[in-house]
Image 1: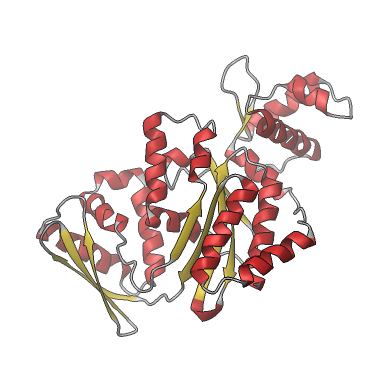
Image 2: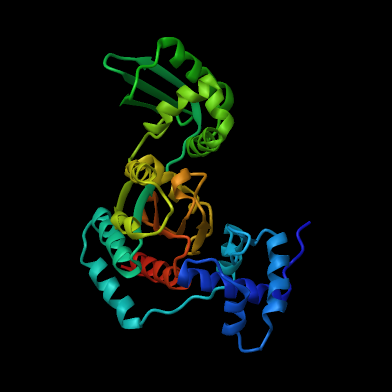
Length: 341
């Protein structure tokens, strides 16, 4: 059972997080002592930091270095934050600009651009159809040139067909195994839940050692069971990630950009917000489960409901060291303007 932080422990922890956001360097006890008004000694702060280290809130990259806050520390810090208010005139201007746009797609594009301009992060906005029938049966048919016909039968008596082009060929036997795996494990599940569960299973290390799951990954990356109306997704500001100190090699940075180019990957990022209460800002610190290169990134998002059975998510992807209070407030207020327009 985890022991709750004391008031002093929480204060010191949040002081450390703020200092780390500002500098990007390990934080020493002397730095915190100088920044506090209560004259708490560096020795006392070192004792508090040692306790925080044991509880998993801090890490120490080198023996003689200061401490670095962990994802757990950032989550504690985010939970303590309130919302800043944007100037009313600015919100009214956003509503006016959005109100001039005729289509959902135009509003989505405008919103992602505004998020990027105001946060200098990666602005993401998506309108997602929420039709979510249950799976009856999946059929897979091999075609020429590495193409596969996916036939999805659902319990609303609909049949949905889609042809996908794979990066490498799968044999008829491979497709049979994948089909049997999906039908055996997920018959009767809502398609959205099937996709989310598959993402979880495929993200686990042991999936790489399972022959069926390894080959299923190829189809999942191309939108397995992602049938029906396609979501509208716009993302701006990915180039802002280049200037961040993400401790990535050039190859890992390229992998990150390739991941963000995959609509499926972006939907996986946004899916985590769809089950939280409408209009409530959510924060996910550290995204290594989506892609290893996203370990030092955080995602702040807000779900809203639109007319015509659409859900929308607006979000900002940025460094784990971002100004959370400012970005959270920006996401909330732009989301409100988007909804009111």
